[in-house]
Image 1 (tube, rainbow, N blue to C red):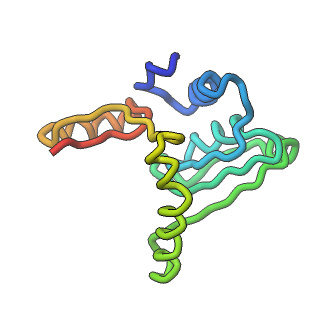
Image 2 (cartoon, helix red, strand yellow):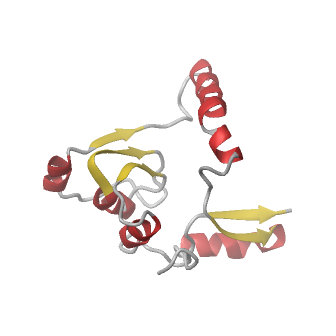
Length: 143
């Protein structure tokens, strides 16, 4: 699976795809937006003393993990959510995002992975592809 072949990626394929994209370099931080079986993939990917930040649970909130791997790698796991935070905290996080992350996006130092861009009229098909786990990255709807 090469960098251009991102459709149909499943949790089991993710570690190999990321290792290929990073030329085998350790991953220091994994931002897990989907949970479920992807958490196990995150644990395989993260390097020694790395961090896994769980933000979303689209693939499920339960997972079975090898605690031995967690201990050997000295991995730190964080869970966070934005929705239930107080408004002043959300405002501060938005400011920090604007100061620290937005410049990286603008300069293309970091880039989101876009799986596909589809016309809004095909939103049902795009949703089916996501439900069937046939996407790797963002699905963008074009108006």
